[in-house]
Image 1 (cartoon, helix red, strand yellow):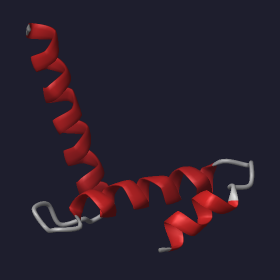
Image 2 (tube, one colour; image 1 turned 180 degrees about the vertical axis):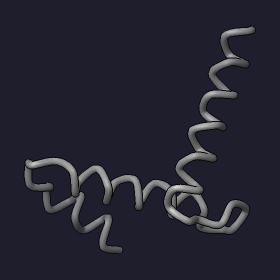
Image 3 (cartoon, one colour; image 1 turned 90 degrees about the vertical axis):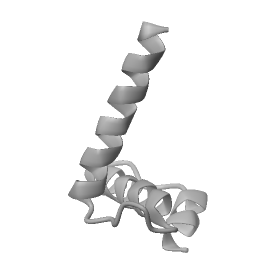
Length: 61
């Protein structure tokens, strides 16, 4: 039980960090999409491998 609580706290802290990092507004309807999309864009920008067309199509939406 203690392990689950620690994992929830860690995930919440990471979500807060990513929210501040990408200037997403916490509590808005598209908060999760903002955080995930910006994180994907940042990850793809740092990798050398080209992105698959499915990933590019999803990000551009």
